[in-house]
Image 1 (tube, helix red, strand yellow):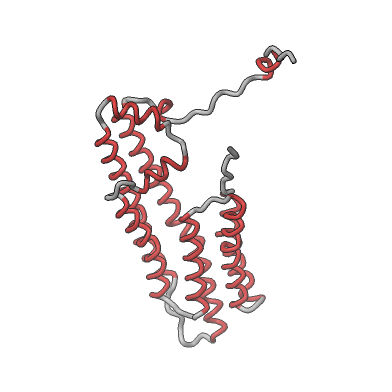
Image 2: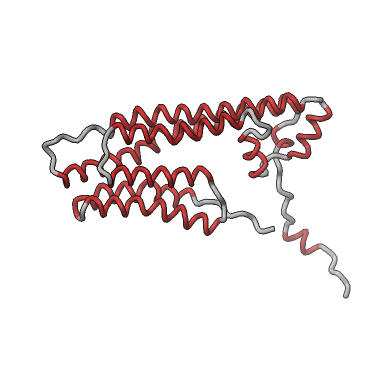
Length: 251
């Protein structure tokens, strides 16, 4: 089976953050603000489509990100200001968080999909241990609590997004011309793009590490296994000497 290709994080950062920010800041003055905005928004959307066609990996977070970008561009092209962007920036992580939270109370909490799709954990050994120790109910409760913690990270992101956006997307003064307003709005979109990653994404990554630590530490407690036994480890590669020493097959 051919291994699934992974997204290149460096290219993702370039096309989703660095390039759009540079375009909004530099091209808004050289060209029309509308053209600069369209180019800046087309890059992450185009990259998202390209990455899906290349990796065949349907990443729901990336899909939400593209929809979020399209809304941002639509609001900017309609020349909406202030509170509209703040509500939009808060709404997307809030909607995701609610969906994650609801999944925690179903038979398949969202974190189960992460465990099964990544194939990081040695589920055969884990399930066998849970069964022998009669801890299946405790494992289901752990999945539920971990998913709830995951949902909380989106609620935190929603609040941070709102307060950041309400301070960035300030009302544009009536003394500005239409072109000046478009340039100023592009600058606000640019600041929200890079500050959102720095101020919001980094804390969320740290919170995710906490959720992973919480899940693994409690899984070790429920199974009595150490970290190496919990994880799937690839078989060791044979050395050149071992390969050369193998007896050749007689024809």
